Length: 181
Ligand SMILES: [Fe+2]
Ligand SMILES: [Fe+2]
Image (tube, protein in one colour):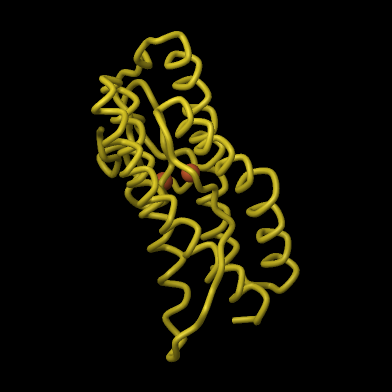
């Protein structure tokens, strides 16, 4: 794998791993504050980030050594409103800056497998940002988010609220590959 794409993949793995853990923490806080649907959203998105992290990690199977890697991440957790703000910041960074840049570099370097891994994450993060914005709107009015089922594709991490999809619009997996939260 070309060096710059490889470094981007390691950083993306670190970023997704941290997001996974951050959202599990935020879910517990949302539960304590009585925002059960927001807690469900955080757990669903945490699973989606886990899928991305593992997809990225699998692209690094050729590495044999230890590496130091860094990832951009929002810190300073607080109440659920604040945590949703951090979540939106993180997802916007990924969709507006990080993944578009990583995707272009992977394309330029002819790294097709890396490009697919970045693309699957990129498409999911766009949905995460929308769902977190909807949740924040409700929480800032003192209400829980009006979510029905939240479904996450176990193959690519695509996340959708409402009804179970027949097929994943991103990776083409069948409906039963979606985990319900
Ligand atoms: Fe995300
Ligand atoms: Fe998928």
